[in-house]
Image (cartoon, one colour):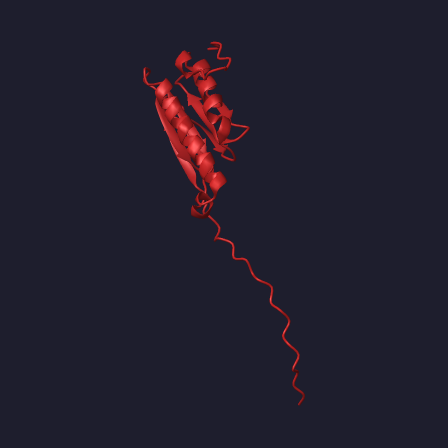
Length: 156
């Protein structure tokens, strides 16, 4: 029996990835004027990332801006963190639903008996305050939601 004295080949470091995150689905019943600001669901590990935390901070600023600009109107402002959202129009006798896959931040504006408006923040959460502010100004005819320097002509 011959034994080898050669050193063992070095082992490659195995980088552990976090366990897969369960997809989050939210149902949002709508029965009165509502603005739903949404943000993709993120894992606890992602929350520790500086860029993800900055995006979450900007999302919260957008939620507070929207609440503030609509404070004079009876409009619900609701933040939602999810991978998909099912919006259900509970104000109609024939309940309809619209499911949206959340891959970036945005907002959904709803008022009974009107076509809802979906807005995606294409530049990420950094432009969510402006995008949803302009949308709310137009959809609800609320000039207080128009962010400085934006074109918020009333298109109701």
